[in-house]
Length: 470
Image 1 (cartoon, rainbow, N blue to C red):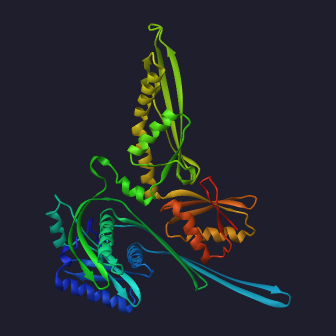
Image 2 (image 1 turned 180 degrees about the vertical axis):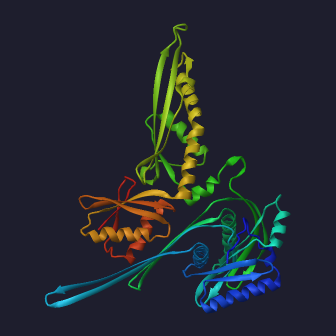
Image 3 (image 1 turned 90 degrees about the vertical axis):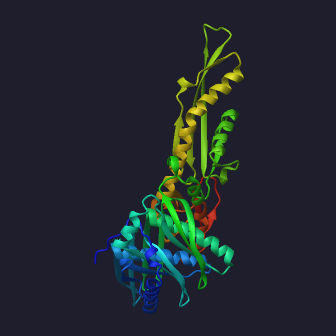
């Protein structure tokens, strides 16, 4: 049956007692039967799809997020399909007169795509697991009429859930945060990338990443309260793609990227102070310790002194400033800006005054382009992932190279990983990572325990490349 998806999903008509009871009954039946996805139909929703995901984690709020993402992935797989590939291999060899046989099987499933208007309806515990129920509905006649009267004030209803384990206050805050995230996902859609691998019917690896885009402009809390062992907050939120004036929600993006910092490698003290002021005024982090920085700022000044024949006591100065920013995690340039020197000429008898004013003209010319380029880079990194270089040194077996690749690839926020050339027991992996690169080293170390990487440890260096060795 073909599902007609609403541009925005309003759950208002689901709030009647009879509809809620019917939905709860359907969800309880699905939980008892171990059913992940089911069709549902009512006069309020029209045709709908209910998807249930499960999660287990020692931190209750993490379990809720895992369950919600799993439900969204199942919903996407139901609507758009799932790609499955399988490999089987049998080998026979001889050890002396003894026949040695081995069997290997591997099955992999992939789900990739974007889904919009999925509504997180419920969360709770069942059979020792946290579960989340996500619903998507066709745009029924009643809901169409509701939209017609709300075009001037487009609000989205969204729910958030949090574990009550650490008290009501913290649960309420976390549930509100999740409701805000869910509102953004309903409005702008959420891109899902999922990969699950099963080897020899035993070793199971699954990763799931989700990226959403949008800004909550304003919201009100419509209802809240305890539901079982969780706390629920429901909001009505107005979500937009950009804030007024076209400004992106760069603060939220910077937080997601770990508030990356800049190190200034600038020889000219006057220019260093001016560039530092631009960064600080634009709320970018500046550090005096190079190894703590993600970005390295290199800038140079070309000054041209010009005599003024008509004014023998005067000299003119023309200044060209070039600023280059390098990403230490992948050793690449992310931007370069340079001013037009013809607009920086300052004439004065005082050398100090000439430099101060000419520098100022040049910095003013590059300031807007410089900050815009940084914000654009941050936004692209958040949406598409960041390229991070990871190296393995002093390894003895090619198996170690493959195991580390699988380890990195299994991390939930790894979008892709490729292996470079191997030379002198040294190899570099190019990783596209959706999270904070500063966390990647620790995440790999923790995950390595699940792979044949005994003795793996991090190697200290100042190159920006995350390096491991045995």
